Length: 517
Image (cartoon, rainbow, N blue to C red; front, top):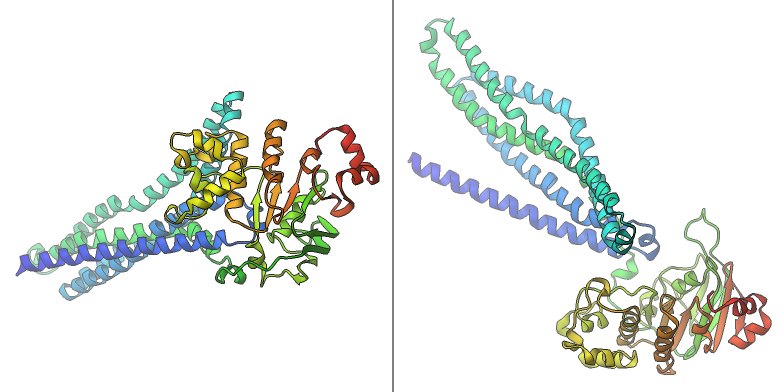
């Protein structure tokens, strides 16, 4: 019977371990997804104000911290508490005095340890949180700027930065691990002392040491069972205190509200047949900042080629962010075919827009997957991919590659030239088959000849496509139907290239000084 009970007890403990571990990691996966989703769905102005190292660390390290330092320890505490209560109850039944001696001795000792180590555990938890972010930051900066690192020979600077940050992180980890484990040897010694003291006390009573053997045996066996359970509970508590900072940050991530308009199903594109109008738009990111756009008004006709130029800080990129619906006006408004754009129809309007930024983000996947970006490979329409590549003048290059559209471009497109990356960006925009194409300084990093070829591809696109170009080079917007010159958040001149040279002293000066704005 004893053997059967031992086997059953072992199986039950194994099942409890499997269940608690499974529950912890399923919960962790659910938390990770929620944190990532709530972060990804934040408004554009929130994203540009954040550090990506902190976000990556939050999604990966903080959630892992919650799993290993909060969820698992809580489950461990519950199971340990049940076991401790069962052992103490058994000792009380056998000998209340022995039970009281063990509970007081071990309880007071662990209580004092928790009192003196709590702050250290908490501080180490905060240090771990901070240094996890710093480690990712140093890695991203060193590897992301590898050209400058190799050119300037700053290897040791980044290695030293990494070593200092990583050392602080591992010191905090090690410190918490030591604090979580060090009481056990001390408690084992204390158990021996308690048995010796109790043996002496009982030996002085009637019957001597012989009559006290059952009580001493109960204390010895009880201590043998109680100490591991107490140590397990203490270690779980230590992990909980050390993981508080990770839990706090994770809760902050989970408290991010998803804008209601983004939780709705993807709508059909908003009807766009006539014009886009910005009417006396004002915008600033916070109330404390000055206006970036100040009574900006302009009108863009469907099918037109529109250029937006201006000096650094003029507000041209902010104006385009507003047109794309990434930000909303502080005052004034945007109308499409006379319909005001607001939170209720912003997603429908965005379905009309394709965007080619200055720096194209390319994933380490095939050309086809980068053109049909954000779509699983199983449902990519290769006919649309090839049509988009043809319009972007990319098909000739792809035809020369051994693997064609299945050619991998490398991380961030490292295997491609700047012009090839921009053409993939244009092809990606055309794959979406939208009515508005926005080139946000898309050719500013290219040499003149490459820019010429890219713009030839753009100029040959359908006349039904509305194209908005933000440019540093006047040559990029020279063939536009209308050019808006922006300064201090306002349109100060508009018209064709030739017209602006005549009426705008600042535009004329720029055309004389050179091609760059």
